[in-house]
Image 1 (tube, helix red, strand yellow):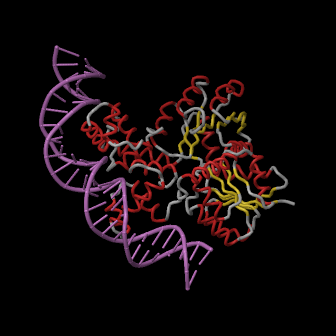
Image 2 (tube, protein in one colour):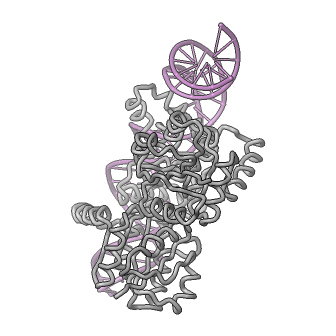
Image 3 (spheres, chains in turn red, yellow, cyan, orange):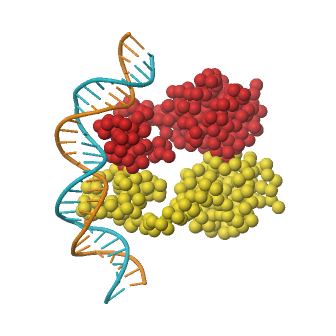
Length: 211
Length: 211
DNA sequence: AGAAAAATAGTGGGAAAGCACTATTTTATT
DNA sequence: AATAAAATAGTGCTTTCCCACTATTTTTCT
């Protein structure tokens, strides 16, 4: 029994490195390596892997979107998200979509193989640090806010704020009223636990919402 | 003639992947892989590589410090900085210290090998994108501001701004008047070419003035 | 010692951000 | 089809930010 694994990562070092690491294991067969989300979606039909190692931060498509589309095409595929960031908000989102694993890039060979085998057998695998963070997060959110997830519009507004636009300029750009922008801004301050613009920008950068 | 190469990177996937990639080339011999800066410094005497592939963002030591210490121990070693960020300020710093190469992690196998061979033969190697950015940066700085240098007080104020303090709060903290803080803030806006608080925070983070 | 740069403090005014609300319409989700 | 979430828009108000000045004192450098 060999597990068919595919890799999607735009960093050749990571992608090729992973492939070489996995090639050493007899139980695993790397059937494809993709550099972009679109490449992967187009060609996935020919490789039909059991497990996909998916980088969160691809240049062309956002992680959650890509995962959703992939699952639509191959509903039985197991996705392990590969990332160097450990932002719990993103982890939650990916798990909600239906990903079975979440690995930080500083995992060693054995952990990766273990993760692949676990999800292949119907299990779930999270990097220990992430698991811990999720638990901590649950405790926190019970006491305070469960709504750390930003909406589409809030993200747009936040991004424009980091680009040094004023509320009025943002309103013009999005064809909405100044008041609406102000409202979004207030929600952002609340959700991100920030005091002012400075805090918003910091959180935006921390959460990878900039550039 | 084989080139002795060592790797220092805290991400096992990257480190092991790199090793496996380089093992395929006969002209290169990977003599050591280190996960932390301190490990590397301690054990570097036994491996004595010609070229070091050095990750910028190690958990224990800052990139510039580590490079300096490494060069003190092995003055003839060639260092290629490996990074996923392409912040020109950091690139400049590392080159100034005496690193010979700067590679983005999304370089492919051949580029990496080429970089190793180039620096081994006394040359310099930069990822094309970085090279371009450095050139652009030079042009910019010649046309406009040579005064990107912030004063002691300006840096203090900027740091407090990123910590979400208001001008009044900053004034109280530094035992100066609100007006003085306001003045520093204005200089910061000018010097950093920012429009507002959002811009200040972005620049502060870009230039590594936060945390 | 003298010049230059930095830090200090001020006035006055306009623009922007932030807060606390209410309220309607549109979009998702089930 | 019903409910919840998100997006929209508003009022009124206060605080903070940003700008353009002037001006004095303190540090730093040559």
